[in-house]
Length: 173
Image 1: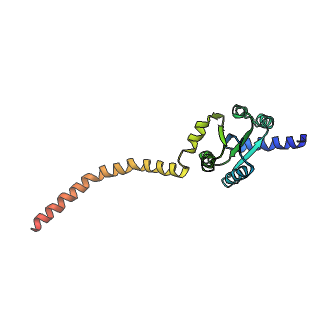
Image 2: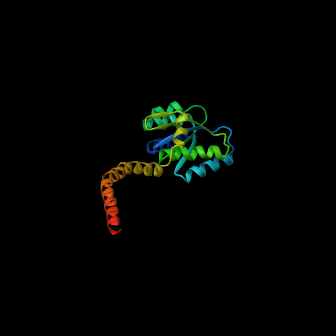
Image 3: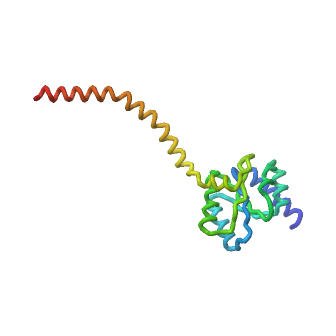
């Protein structure tokens, strides 16, 4: 690779590093070309970029982007998944691909802001419910105390209505 090409790749990587919400490092050894193409296509449909890069170029890009903690999850041949949207979604889609395709791809770790994630933590993120489910669950939990308060405050009124209805029926008889 020429020096100009390397400079261009480093600047593209630094840009991807600074824009991404999560970066997942993978070991891609043993994957065939067809599997790699399928992986990239699957991830691209979810706005996730997957790049196989030389470690020296990643080190330079991480230095330029001020993300030196990335070095802790870079070892040997590495492929990086850059997630730009929902964090758990990136981990979920990558993990689902690995399971469904019986891929030799292995997660080495992740970088979430300044926090380095172990492979188990990345898989844990993948198992989280989606943002929509979490929001609806939160709304349900916020509504529960209000509904209980409503029932407690309405109970005396219901009791009074019940007593009055019984008295009116007895008076008719």
